Image (cartoon, rainbow, N blue to C red; front, side, top):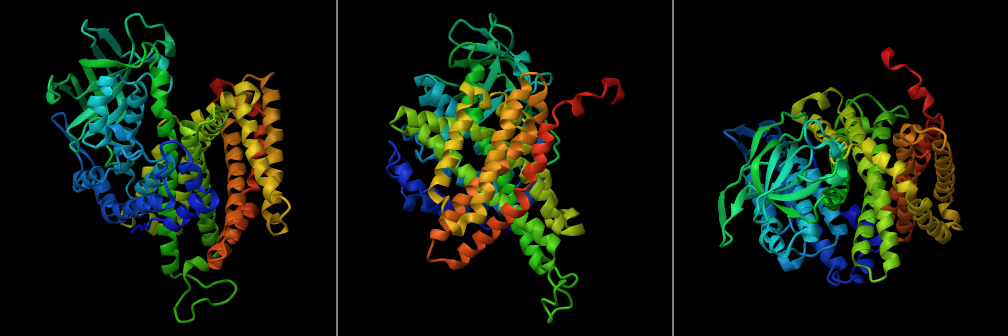
Length: 593
């Protein structure tokens, strides 16, 4: 069986000791109440919900899955009750505007909540995750009437929000979509088309669904510039605000998926469904990215979530499973064999998992802190820098969080040996569940292309240079500390290597149109590993400042050393791969494949 205990100590360390989040957040307008005590109380309550309610039904819900019959979706046993408890606790609207019933808490706190929920039950976490994106889009772009009617129900978890983008012929290239919207003459539109891969498109846990649908108006320009966004409810509203007749929006089938089987994924048919424009005509793609940017960070958290559960489960198994003897002498003479945690290969897998997870969590918290600052800070220049940092880190958090999430889950399954391959132990579910996170909300290659093709090119590299200043600030503060030299020196070397390969890629792309795309995935991983080295220096700085917990500090130093000595050196190989250019990829004739 898998095991999960919310890593509250680690979360609080990053939140308070590493980033001093409470001081930064309470200084922002609207966050005066976001004190360390309040954030700790929120995390405590979320941990209780995750450990006591969500995690116990994770495996059974996966085995039962969602059932589609007569246009309706029935969720697995226990899911409806768990979701009701989640919604009644106010978790759906944690960051939403208090004017509409939200709690108005920072995104930084919401990240840690999302991580715990995903660790406990990845499938159930996706339902409110989609709703939060819908809340963001409507709050930013909706009319006053749309906000007052829909937001309270979405924030309260009574209604489900969805994102309806993908069509069978138009995946990531949304400019190809065909769903159309025809004006009805009364301010509403008739929406016709079919969308696929719609998470939470239909289920029995909420009273209504609020679909945000991308479609084309009759006069729409070609391509992505001709996309508009429409609000299409499952049940149309009556004049008095009650739910009226069923709209012509229905689930045609559900997908039979590799994993996340308790999270329903639907084919949605809109057959002249009534909808209302959200935002400006032909600006729907930009509007959808209001929620997509949050969802991409959210999906990155899902990868970290599953990795955490896989790691905890593998550690528990490695300490209990007896096999062989330690190479340097018998570790447990009272037993017929030693626990497998004595073996170097097992320790390598566990330490790799832990070193990556802790670095990713720190980077994700920092990125979400930048989101909060970009929304709330009084100084426009500070807001812009924070927005730059959040934008730069979004593809890295998403792609590294999910890519390493999958890698770590597989490594931890291997710790179980043959037992990891057996369903009863639960590890194979983690491998199946986390795999989708590398695909949805923009595949990891799309994240890499966004990084090298767009983010690095903004105003001559403004975002990249802004992050380098953050690193320089860290090095200026701790660079002369001899007790941290073993961490500082590798970071300096990594940053210099990253700067050099970034310039090489920029120069190479002037002559080779395939250069950036050929390098994208390897470059993103190299950037991610370097950013993790930075967060490890920040964590070591904070850990050595703790005088009340020598064991915690010693552990941080040991895991940090492992990262610097066994993980960070991978960037030299990635550097060589990036510099190999596109020729090794493009030289083979198409017919030879």
